[in-house]
Length: 154
Length: 154
DNA sequence: TATTGTTATACTCTATAACTATA
DNA sequence: TATAGTTATAGAGTATAACAATA
Image 1 (cartoon, rainbow over the protein chains, first blue to last red):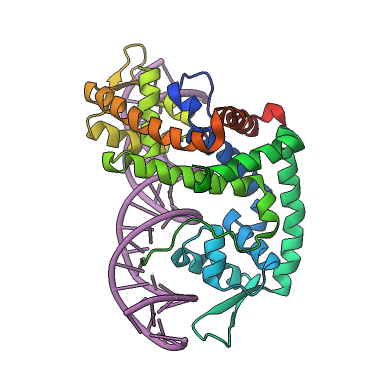
Image 2 (image 1 turned 90 degrees about the horizontal axis):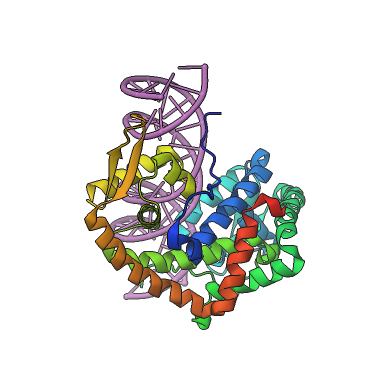
């Protein structure tokens, strides 16, 4: 075996890192992200792309700036991301008559079909981690994570 | 103000993303990481570098492979990361007599002094987020995050 | 033969500055 | 003047393959 596993070895004393929220978040996110990528690996869809497709399904017709802001992606980085989805035939930009600068974003028919298939796989992925926490634990976790990103709790 | 804020707008319906563990982790980690970077910005130390310094303090003399594995960093990526710390005079590689291939990693004196200063700033950073959760909430969060990355809970 | 550290490299993510066409 | 989208570009983070020295 020539590859170095990403999973951290727990035999080493990492000092105060073990009590740092940011360090724990990184490790957890790495684990979840790896499983997510493995889950959608054959689909050639990355996490950010999946999140865009799902927003378009839930909120069709939004402008690029709205979608990218909702996902915390800078508009400048959103362009090539969405270009890839459009090139794959999964989503499309449409003109907005009220403002000729802006563009409304939509799933294509194929995008909707693909997303439905992705939902199944993502649900299985999510179930794997929910099983590690319990349903109640997942609810608690989501509440705590929401607080972390909300300055109102500072 | 010409920059697009990373903070996601909550006015948009993001569909099932709002109940996805991975999505919540990403948002929380972005918030914590931004504060961490702002906290250590003037020090010119990035999160991964800080984590290496702290491991060297807690566990001096480890081999590169041990440190990188403990932090979930591939050895191939660890090399330039540690090179930068060494170039900054904060850490050093020392020969290991028992195995001439391996190298033991240590803080320099200056590294120890610097790390002590960083500890103060990082403690303030950590306190900001602990305040959003409460001490108990932080404990619960760390427990749940540990479960996410531990297949034993699958 | 296997392991430690290393180099080279590539792809993704994220960030800033500057442009265009509209408003 | 300001805004929506875009381009170019640069810096991190992360991945694989292959190598030299040593075990």
